[in-house]
Length: 89
Image (spheres, rainbow, N blue to C red):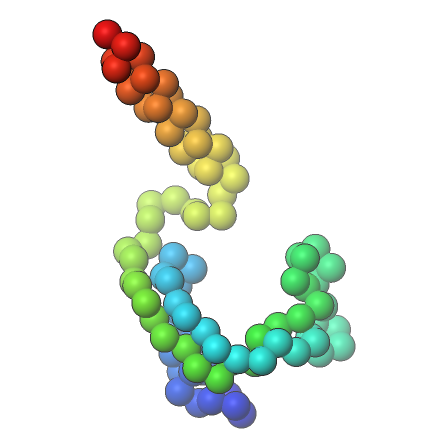
């Protein structure tokens, strides 16, 4: 909140399924806050401006759930193959 109280206020309300635009400065994470499991785990963005571009309802499943993502990919492939087969007929 030291940089932008307004951005902090908006940031507290964000949902993972929303689309946002953020402007700020990339800085090293504070000591003890580094996450070696993430490619970007050594940095963070000090937000100066934030804008919500699109809100979405919370889906009935976790967006980060890899099993759901794999299922959706498989279903999309089945749909593509079905359309291709129908086009041949």
